[in-house]
Image (cartoon, rainbow, N blue to C red):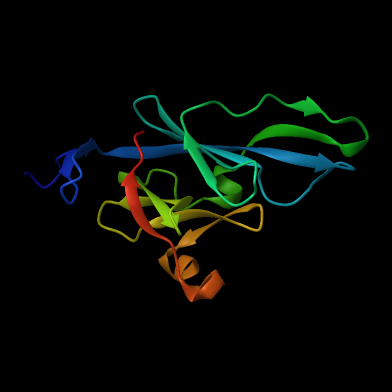
Length: 161
C-alpha cells in the first residue's frame, strides 16, 4: 500500500473505499419556534454520493443505520413541526472533511445501539442511543457515558455505506 491508498483492509472484515464527510443534516422537532431537544435523525453525507442515516428505533432503545433520506418537514399541529437543517458547523465542526475508513455497528446485549466511524490516522467517533435520544462523541465521551451496568457497547458488524 502507498501512503494514501483509499482501499484499506479492516481487520479481516473486507475492504471499504475511504470516504470524507461532506455534511451532516438533521431532522429536528420544533416547538414554539425553538428546537426541542437533540436531532431526531441524522444524515451523514460523504463524497462519492454515499450517505448514512442514523435514527432511534421505535422502541427508543436501538439505533437504525440505513441509507434512506431524512423525513420531509411536517406540521404536527399543536405539537409543533419538524424541519431539516444542516448541523455540520453547529454540532459537528470537527467531522467535516474527516476521512472515514469504516463504519461499525455497536451492540449491547445483542442489540445495535450505536455506530462507530473509524478515522484514518485519528480517534474514532461514535453515535449511540440512550434514553430515546441520539448521543455522539469521541472515545472519551463514549467510554465515560453512564452505561447500564458500566458496560459499553462493542463493535459487532460492519455497516455498509
